[in-house]
Image (cartoon, rainbow, N blue to C red; front, side, top):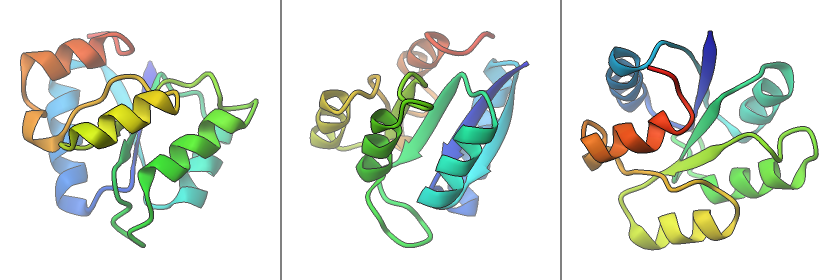
Length: 123
């Protein structure tokens, strides 16, 4: 079974995102609250995709910093990553840093988001 890692979401958003995604895709979903948790999980597990929040709920650190770290480490550089953000400039910066095109929470339950996710997750 494929695995998805969701990084940096508050409880409400994590539940919402994982609920919507798990209705469409047959996946196991893990959660990481911080940069350190995300890196550790990625080193221990094999993920089909990692979704990183624009701002970490726990400490308000930038999701793009985690993306940079993932893409700079040989062990994680090939794991597909998306940033969850409604801001176009954040999406553009993430893509420039090596992320796949992501989506915002406002577009979570849309056909476009499901198409983006289906590039990495099997339904």
